[in-house]
Amino acid sequence: MSDKVKEGIIKKINELSPLLISIAKEIHKKPELAFEEDFASGLLTSALKRHGFKIEKGVGGLKTAFRAAYTKGSSPVIGFIAEYDALPEVGHGCGHNLIGPASIGAAIALAKSGLKGRIVVIGTPAEENGGGKVILSKKGVFKSLDVAMMVHPSNDTEIVKRALAAIDVTVEYFGKPSHAAATPWDGANALDAMILAFNNINALRQQLKPDVRIHGIITNGGAAPNIIPAYTSARFLVRALEMKDAQEVLKKVKTCFNAAAHAAGVKIKIKVGENAYEAFRPNYPLAEAFERNLKLLGVKIRKWDEYKELGSSDIGNVSQIAPTIHPNLDICHKQIPHHTKEFNAIAGSESGMRGMLIAAKAMAMTGADIMMDAGLLKRIREAHKRG
Image 1: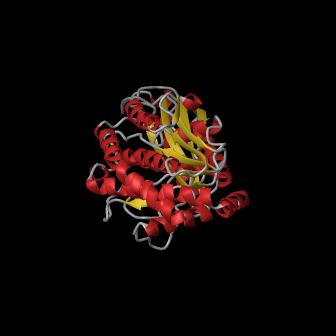
Image 2: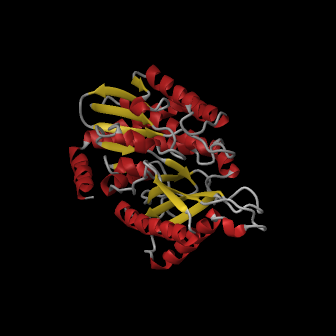
Image 3: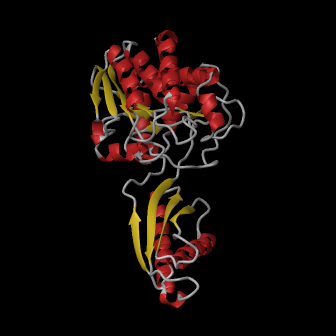
């Protein structure tokens, strides 16, 4: 039965391919930034509605988020995550125009397979800037899912890829202006404090664990060189493999900030962002099931290196709630970095479209495995409980 079901899924996605490719190309041509993805969200929900999914828009209080559900039984609940936001200047330089169509293709094909269960697509805006999934997680949008799946286009195929916990922190220094040449002694230099803060953090780094990252930018460095800067601001990210480690490092970073203010004789304000990205929590039974299906589709997979070249993503917050996979799938076949115009071009190319269809098939086939094999679902759940 399993082989027959999977053959049907592959056939269905092949039938859907003109629709999925059209949606991916339309989203690619009209990139939308975080929380502004009205066009992309509309295309995806319209396609799901035409194929029998019940649509709920604006979930979690985000106007471009959505939940689409197809019910043929109460369990298991198979979740597919859709992303569709773009980047400034480089458009879909991270290939999110492919993620949404792949997820809805997988969901529609699985819904038409005849298997019992509930299939849910969660549309998640603002992965690149804003942490849409963090907000949706706080609103309980993912808590009903037995599993969550999405595939990210990349320059390599990697089944399990860790993601660092990330905390956003802003620091502001408030000094006193004065003429920098005539009466500098009357001023209190907020830029001195900022430079000291960066130097303090540079000194801190030699005492940090190898997985910790601290990086920042000055967002306001003063108005003119002949004025003692009365105000400066900067934004930092503090990252680590575990959130508890990131939180401990954040305490040390705050000490660096406060010491700089004391030394420069200025006032300080520190603001920690509300939407921290959690570390990604792998689920190996789910990942291995996906890998088997990817191999059935003829995809070559190298040995996993889940700690290589780590970044952060709000999918980490989903993985803390439900068993989750977030594999990378090679659409480039050469080393083209993300967040570039070159990757944007690949994301709109035939190579990108082929990768999207493979991702849809592999996710739907994995969903079918879970719906047909209660033992697999049990192993997935047990692995999630173990952490």
